[in-house]
Each structure stands twice: as structure tokens, then as C-alpha cells.
Image (tube, rainbow, N blue to C red; front, side, top):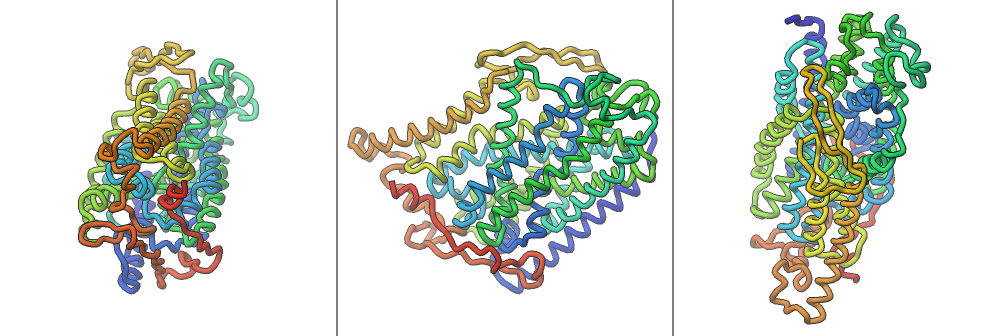
Length: 590
């Protein structure tokens, strides 16, 4: 087995750069936290709520621009049956940031929450918050798995090692890095991450384009040279499927803790909106080199390269097209720089998802549901332990699931179908309650799971109109896999059904209890009569009193500013927003 020494050296250099920045930021965070006081756990989760425009724009852009984004986009542009027309992630996630900034960032930040699950637990209670944690956790695990899979693919190309081994190594690095620091470390490494991706890919693109084995991509965009045109096309029978997937990316990209962690760390609600718009533009810009590399892969006569006579698609290596192009179409010194930079860059994305999942568990499950009197030190240690657990789960998913883009879609499915309609209800619909939330949860879950999932080899038990049987050929083994493809937009339909069920059952149970049709003693969820009077949380942190949380104990948000990080994170005066409201008050108006 050939080991590329130069590739290993590049990997080590860039990894040390990322780790060094992360450790430095963690040290600065610890120093500023000791000087300012305040909870270490909240500094880890939301970074003191004083993130500035420069670092904030980078870290929110890097929320989506990681290994899955750049590798997945190049993969779908390259695939003959898809092409650019089906590479929906750049526009889908950019629009999700725009929609999130317009409608969701301001109410979430102005109310001073710490995690995305806070409004659910505030209105629907801790038990419902625990149920909603499940799809939120699965979303973060799928996302982390996509990142690790992409990083493992890149490493396997550079040093020519088994991809499973490289995924495990990548996971160990990501877990270690996540333990080093909280959101401060993540934010600073995101600056380095985007710089590495931008420079590494753009340096490589001109060399790949000028390789003699590569045809003119403007010609291969519309004509068949080595494979189908890389622009791709949407067949009439696939239009609803395309629209369903696009809505999934656009709306399913909003209700993520990894996104709201940045929103809630902004210095004001208006600032959170601005950061979302900057990140939307950044996502589109960062996708351009990936699109070009995918087009280059589709325009290459691989028989003239060191890769071999068969194209990557014929070796079932389409998901690794980006590192393959850099490795075999660029000079060695360029490819090693590009691959090393991209590898180190995508590594820093994994810590965001793992940190987000551990933050939700430590706060919304461990602290609020089981140990409301837990000390700050205890919460920090719970976060550290869950980082190992969630990192192991993400590694398992990366090893057991195929396409990077498939992992990407899976990561948004449950979040889109279950959490997005719940977030709509809790923020914008008056009168919803726990009974409606449970009904919406069940409706959305059954309708989505009923449609099956080919990537998990989960057969459907609901056959929606327009379903067809497709086959997938594994070129290496020659195996033919048959699966059911649902062309009906059942994911969006499941999301809408979940939302309508939430509203309908909420108003129905409210009428039945308030009219006396049902006795108040049957309100076993305390959703209509008592309204969780002992579970209401403060705008920023729960205020405990003898293990109970009383509505009258609402305390103001205390903003923690790290003086030692002034100039980068602090922006306490510009774009200030004093508006604050509570969904509990919003729903009580009805």
C-alpha cells in the first residue's frame, strides 16, 4: 500500500493549525470567563452572547460549508443521472439562512434562549422537550456523520488508507478537538476553516482545468463527451420529487441547534439576522469551486490520468470525486496543499454538530428534566461525556451509510418533518399546547417513516401516488439493488400534516377542557389547565427555587462580555435590540 509522505505532512500541518487555534481560543475563553464570572456551561454553549460581525459571519457560514457541503455538491454535479440541476444544497441552504434570518432569528434571540429546545420546554413541558430532542439529536448525528464520511474519503485519497480507518481517525480527532473548547474555539477555527477551503480549492481549480485530460467544461455542460452533460436536467416525472427535496433543504435547514447556537450567541436580535444574511451569501460563494470540480470530473478522460481507465462513477467512488480530482489532475504540490487544507477545514465542522447535540442533552434533558439543581461544573462534565457518546454514534453512521449526499438528506428529514412545524407553532401560532404537539409529532413521524428510506434500506408501508421501483447497480461487485422511489412530495406533505395536526388537536383539547366536556382532572399533561406553571423557564436561564421553577421568578438576561476578546467578539452597542418577549405570554394572549 502506497503511503504519500507529502500528503501526511500536509495533513499534520493543517491539523496542527486548526488544533492550535482551537486550543488558543479555549485558553482565551477560560481566561476571560474567570475574569468576568458567569457560568462556564453557558459560555461553552452561546459564547457569552457577544459574537461580532466578522467572526459571526464566518462561523455561521461554516455551519453549512463543511465536508458534506463541498464534497456532496461536487458529487452531484459529477453524477451522470443528476448534474448541477440536482445539486440543490447551495441554493437550498442559502435560502434557509435567508428565511431563518427573516422570520426565526429575531424572536429566538430576543427571548434570550440558550438552546433551540428551550421554547418547546417552556410551552409544552419537559416531557415534550425530551421527545423533540430525539429528532434533533438524530439530525446532528447524521450531519456529523456526513462530515466524518467526507473527511474520511479525503484522507483515504491522500494517504491511500482504508476509508473506514480514516473515518475512525477523523472521528477521534474531532472528538478531541471538541473537548478542547466551546463556541469560542468553534468560532475562531471557523475563520481558519473557510480560509483553508477558499484558498485550497481555488488554487487547485486552474491546474485541474488546464490538465490535458480535461475537456472544455462549457462544451461538456451541454454535450455528451465522456458522460451525460454535467448541467443535468429535471425530467417531468421527477419535478415533484425535486421540489420536495428542495423544500426539505430550504425549510429543514432552519430548526437546527447548530444554526441557532450562532443566532443565540449574537450580541442582539438584529445582529443575528444580519449574520444569517451574510452566511447565505457566503454559502453560495463557497459552492462555486465545488461545482467547478464536479464539472471537471465529468469532463475528464480518466484513461489519460494516473487514476486508471475506469471513471470514479464506475468504481462507486463518485462521493470522492473532489479529492480524486485534486489528487490526479493537479501537480502533487498543489494537490497536497488543497487536500490538506480541505481535510483540516472540514474537521472543524464536526465539532459544531457534536457540541450542539451535547449542549441540548446537558441543558434540556439532564438539567431541566432530571437535575434542575445541578451545578455548573456538573453540567460541563455531562457535556464532555456526551461528546464521546455522540461522536461514536456519528462514526457508526459514517461507516454504515453510503453517499455523502444521502447522509445529508437524511440529516434534514426528521428535522424538517417533525421539528420545523413544531417551531412554527411555538413561535407564531397562538393557543397550541402539548396535546397538539404530541399529535403533530406522531402524524409527521408515521407519514415520513411510512414512505420508507432507501439509504437505510427501510421499505415503505405507505405507497404514495406515483411510486416506482428503481434499481441501483454496484459497479464493483455487480450487485443490483431494487428499491421503491416515492415521487410524490410526501416529505413536505408529512410536514404540513404535522403542523395542521398540532393546531387542530391543540384547539380541540382546549375547547374540550375549557367547555367542561372533559373534566380538568383528565388534563394529565397539564397542557390546558395549569400551563406548566412550575416548568416555565427564564428568558436565558432557569431560575431554580427549592427544585421548582416559578413563573414569578423570571430574571433578566445577563449578557457576559469577554473583555480580552474585544474587537472581535464584542459588539454591545451596534445594532442593539432590546425587544424581548415570551412565547408563554404570546400564547396566553389568546
